[in-house]
Amino acid sequence: MTAPKKYSNDTTSIWLGNCLDVVKDLPDSCIDLVFADPPYNIGKQFVDFKDFWPSDSEYANWCHSWLDLCIRKLKPTGSLYVMTSTQAMPYLDLWLRERITILSRITWHYDSSGVQAKKYFGSLYEPILFCVKDPKSYTFNTSDIEVVARTGAVRKLIDYRKETPTPYKTTKVPGNVWYLPRVRYRMPEYEEHPTQKPEALLERIIKASSSVGDVVLDPFAGTFTTCAVAQRFGRRSIGIEMQPDYFKIGLRRLGIAEEFNGEVLKPLEKTYVRKNGAAPLTPASKQFGLFDG
Ligand SMILES: C[S@@+](CC[C@H](N)C(=O)[O-])C[C@H]1O[C@@H](n2cnc3c(N)ncnc32)[C@H](O)[C@@H]1O
Image (cartoon, rainbow, N blue to C red; front, side):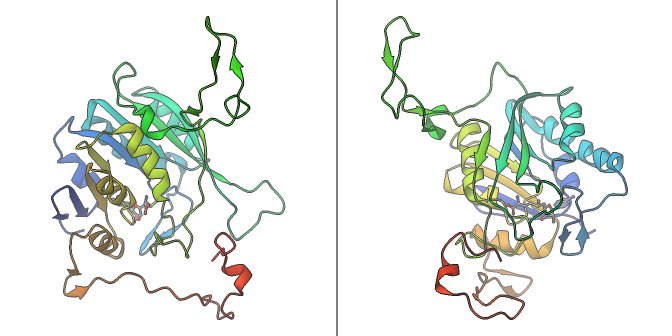
C-alpha cells in the first residue's frame, strides 16, 4: 500500500492508510479518547477488503497489534472504547483486562435486521468494552450524558434509606444496555457503508469520556462518524480509513475538501426505489422505522 495521506481542517485530521502505520507514528500519550470499531472477522465486505481471518487466533493477534498501539498513545487519564463482535469479545476482554481496566461492558442493543433467524436466537446487540488507563483518574462527564430515571422519580417516590428522606433523582447515568436504532437508509446521517455507527452512540461516548478541546482517535473511521460528532462538540480528532471510497465520504462529511483526485465529492443521492426493482414504498412503509432496506 502507498504511504498514508493526511488531510486536515482546524480541528480534524483524517488519514487514508493503514491504521497500524499511522498510529505508530503518533506521539505516545497524546490521545484522550480512542473509539475503535474494527472489522469483526465476520465476513463483511469493505470495498476490496474482506473482513475474514483464517482463524480466531490470527484475528486476535491482529487486534492485539492495534490495541497495543492505541493503549500506548492514550494519555494516562485516557479512555478506550472497543466495539467487537459477540464471538470475539471473550478473548479480547481477557487480553485487555491484563493491560487496562475495563470499567463497563456495554451492550448496544438494536432493532432487528432484515433477515430473521428461525432456528436460533438472532443477534440483536454488539458489545462495547469501555476501558480506562487509570480507574482513579479519568474523564467522565456525568451531567452531559444523564438520562431520565424511569423508576422512583417518575412515581414521585421518596427515598427513606437516606438520613433525611429525599425524592428520587429524576436523572441518572445510563446503564450498560443502550437501545439505539441502527443507521437506516432514510436517516439523514446515512452514508454508503455496510457498518456505519449511529451518531447518537458516538455522541454519548464522546460527551462522557472527553472534554472540549480533547483529542479523539478513531483508527477504523469508516464514514468518519466519530470525527463528525467530535467536530460538532468541539473536540479535536484523528480518523484513519484505508478504503478511498470511505475516505472520500469523510472529506465531504467533515467539510475538509470538496474534491479528491479531480473528483467532485457529492452527497449520496437517495432514491426510495428498492435496489431489487420493487415498486416505490407505500405510504405506510415510508414511515421511519419500517424501512429495512
Ligand atoms: C466497522 S467499520 C467502521 C465504521 C465506522 N465506525 C462508521 O461509523 O462508519 C471498519 C472500517 O475499518 C476499515 N479498516 C479495516 N482495516 C483497516 C486498517 N488496517 N486501517 C484502517 N482502516 C481499516 C474498513 O475499511 C471499515 O471501513
